[in-house]
Amino acid sequence: MRFIGIDPSLVGTGFVCLNEEGNIEGQELIKTTTTLEIEDRLKLINDQIQLLLDKYQIRYTDGYKHTGLVYMEGLSFGSKNGNAVTQLAGLHYLLRINLRNRFNLEYKIIPPTTLKKFVTGKGNSKKELMLLEVYKRWGVSFKDHNLADAYGLAQMSYERNSV
Image 1 (cartoon, rainbow, N blue to C red):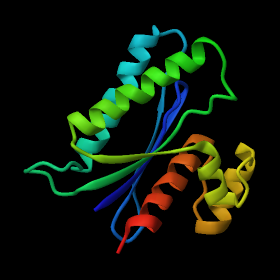
Image 2 (image 1 turned 45 degrees about the vertical axis):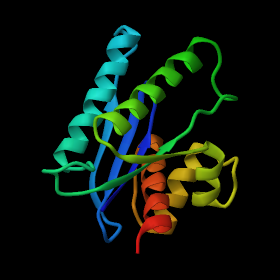
Image 3 (image 1 turned 30 degrees about the vertical axis):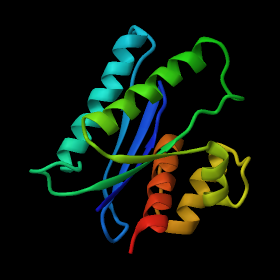
Image 4 (image 1 turned 120 degrees about the vertical axis):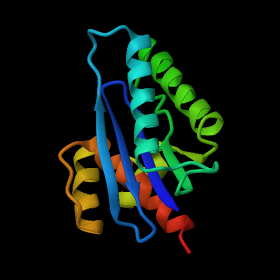
């Protein structure tokens, strides 16, 4: 079993994969640029997630080595407005469709406040505190908050579902 955390973002999507022991097997920050059309940005992120799942041989179908449980951060409606919410929602549903239909993976959508409370004990923590608390709690350091969030999601998946 692999435990995956995905923090979808149009600027830098975080992806972390933990193995059965809860150790990092892989991590990736998928960056896009605003010079690309939104459809191209969404496709790039989705394609990279698919490549990572293939790389770690994660899906529920024959021929693949590992099953996986994905925890993906949900939308934060209060922090974005206008077109950004629509575009981010598009990314969310594109990823969800492919997780379910292409990879046959189980996923859970975790509200941002739930993730923050899990990592820091407070549901309204700032990005800097998330980075610090991930390091203090698990001894893992990240330079990007999207990777720290993805790691927190993967740890939540691991702690709630490992035997």
